[in-house]
Length: 195
Ligand code: ITT
Image (tube, rainbow, N blue to C red; front, side, top):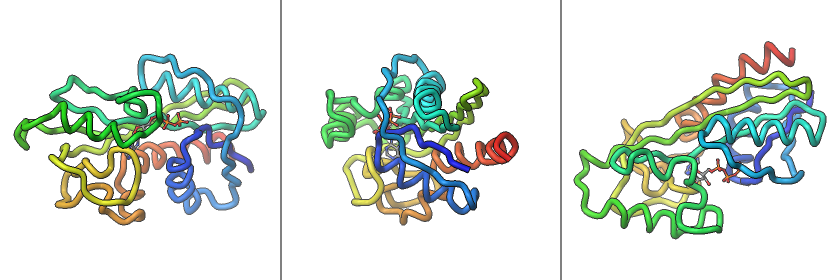
């Protein structure tokens, strides 16, 4: 069976392949290189469905998408769905981290709570759709640490750890993260719908 990963973010492709491959043996997970739809939804779920639908329509194959971001409590949930381009048009520019650290300034540790959210969406060419949400709670550090992962990982301290998400091994991140939680929830649905 073939499944299309409806994302243009190479880091997501890498993490999703590592999360899904052991759980879906025999499934060929393909990266999507078709047109990127306009993500004009107002929620993670709407944007995830926009991406999954576009890839299913373009390829005629079942498609899964990931819409994700970091939600900081004291900023009312921002950057949220705007995480990829928080500081400007370039996706995941290093400026995103600097802007978020600056916005939090010297807010004390106990008020730096945040979580990553990932909504995993599945769209089938026949119009069947499903979404599953995963969250990863933690705090925003006061400075960046670590070189692993991507995006906001260097400034995110996951609950239960004393190191940033960028200092975790890939296997730990891909076991615990918002993305792992969302896609672990989608796997039984994929098995049921795709056989
Ligand atoms: P696609 O829309 O093509 O999938 P994108 O990167 O634009 O790629 P999103 O709109 O879902 O995807 O934005 C996700 C952003 O949220 C991502 O670029 C990071 O800035 C942040 N993010 C999501 N998951 C993350 C993770 O595991 N670690 C660090 N940052 C993450």
